[in-house]
Amino acid sequence: MCGIFGCHSQQSQNLVEQTLQGLKILEYRGYDSAGIAYTIDNQLKVIKSIGDIDQLKQKVINPPTTTTCIGHTRWATNGTVSVKNSHPHLSTDSSIAVVHNGIIENYQQCVEFLTKHNIKLKTPVDTELIPNMLYLLSHNKHNIHQYLQGQYVFCATDKQSNSLFLAKKGNLPLYIGRSLQTIYISSDTLALPQTVTHIIAMEDMETCEVFDHQLQFYSNGQPITKSWQSFNQSFIASDKNGFATYMEKEINEIPAIMERIINTYRKDSTIIRLINQTRTQFKQTKCIHLCACGTSYHAALILAKIIERDLHMRAIAHISSELTTTTLLNEPAIAIVISQSGETADTLSAMDILQQHKIPIIAFCNVTTSTIAKRSQTIFPLLCGPEIAVASTKVFCAALLVGCLLIKDYNTISCGNFIENTTKTLQFARKILSAPHKIPHRIFIIGKDINHVLALEAALKIKEVTYLHCEGYPANELKHGPLSMVDDNTLSIVFGDDATNASAEIQARGGKVIIIPTPNYQSDPLAFIHQIIPAQIFALDLALTLGNNPDKPRNLAKSVTVL
Ligand code: GLU
Picture 1 (cartoon, helix red, strand yellow):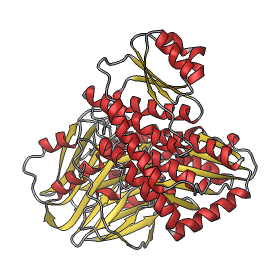
Picture 2 (spheres, rainbow, N blue to C red):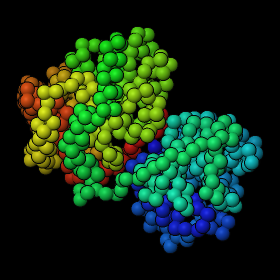
Picture 3 (cartoon, rainbow, N blue to C red):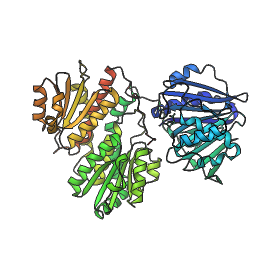
């Protein structure tokens, strides 16, 4: 989490405005506070604000042109949300400014080291260690990784040299982009301007110095050379396409994405070859482990059920952060990891464990240039385009469809029918579901089998954007405990018609029930994929009724790159 953006050019330019534009696009990564630092007359000017980038912009009045600017949008991990704690952080002599993503784990040890050199920190934020360590290391700064533990990326600038200094340890993303006149640094290629023609990704244990449109890389303190990759920015991130929120736009894109996936997965020769190769691997193994977090974990749970049902083999869905060496049996296995961003730190840690066990990894990723994609043997793209809203909607449906098409041909399914049904579900959701007039105190969502997993995902969506207490539950389990909480302030959403007893039990205790009926699985065996849409729309409507911004729920950020 946290978004880093920076730029450097030989000639003075409007780099402050460009940094603010870049940060606005990176806002999905964190938005509790933000800040910039730029060089002017051999001094560093720092402007910080709590809240989002628009609040920061109000503090940046008539910015001058400059040759170096760095910026940050924060998702606090160490130290509360305050102007003082937000980035950039300065060295003791105010000569070096740093923006940082990640956590420095040997905080105490570094504080002791700095104290010995009479440096006292002004905040409890781990980031503040970095400019001070750079200050002490001076010309030796390419050895910074020897002093800092944890996973991090950072970008520093200093008041004299008009250059940028970058470092990366672990898996967090940091890209460098090049246009004719300017070098850009960004946590995500999405934020790079359309003038950028080439990029380079920072790798583990590297540092890089950017000066005079040149880059000098070091790996473990030793100079190395790296080459630029060509890049074409096709996406204009601010485009909500007429919708009021990204979440609404992204839900409405689902039918078109489903069509794109079916066409690509049935016609693209490279993907067909990968599917055939993977199916052969499935036949030669005993178990499939699926690892993911949050919404992607719910997709993994459903796909595990479908693998067991259709392939009659063992499939286990794991929450990535719960996977331990002991949860893996030493038997032939294959893993599928699912991640929208491809940068999810918990899933990358799970991949370390899978790799220790020599388990081949297949990735379902929306961002195919991501670290997870790079570290996997096979990548199946989710083809959703950028997902900006923090609460994932379209990528959930995409992961399910890609998984199903990999498991089985589903040749009987006509693409046209499936898309028509998806569109109908979307229209139906609009008609029957809108935010309730009376805001419930608690919400239970129930269902059986796959519908139970849909209930878990629906509850997560509602929690993320409404902040209301909402639980997904297996329909028949309600009476074994949670029914005690049901009263006339309780709302229940029931997935499927096979949970009628549970619905009746809720209604008998004054709870209100909304039923999302079972589709006709004969005509559309993959209908469970679009059955989640009504719940997504319900969550969106309820969030808007409560006055919340569904695109940026409090305390959350997309692309969870911290452990
Ligand atoms: N540890 C830093 C802070 O709390 C960066 C957090 C992050 O990257 O999410 O500001």
